[in-house]
Length: 210
Image (cartoon, rainbow, N blue to C red; front, side, top):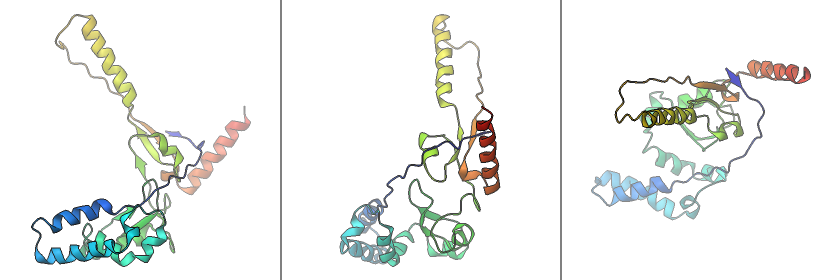
């Protein structure tokens, strides 16, 4: 297990854009949708056309609150209201952020901090990625991840290729299998409060011993 608490927080300028979904609705409106669907889509599109702020990427979440009823109608096309009524878990959040803009009732009850739209990470839910991208250490909370050693995979494959070329073989005469163990990096998104404290104290002791 590897942990890393030496990071510099970076605030990504995440924005919400409804344009891709509105474009899908616009295409569906003109390509054989039923009368009921056309009425629903045309109402959503007309509202957006009458409010220019909804046609551009949105950074100020207060705008979404102003148009929350419209936004819920739009997103209900992806997440039918019956899904929420049947206690399904889903949410829509900002990129590189744990701030939600739309959640199911059960998700809101289990994972959202009371009085906010923020997911309680890692108090109620832990998150772990699988690529160990550079930005994992620069979001808040920092993202735990699994390093698949893709660079080392490339190196090993190239070594095998060089071996075939150097040996004059045009065909692989013997199957070779190289197994690279994934490397876990545990950061804030999967550590409980007491684990964070323990890691901080350990790092402080290690620093003082140098």
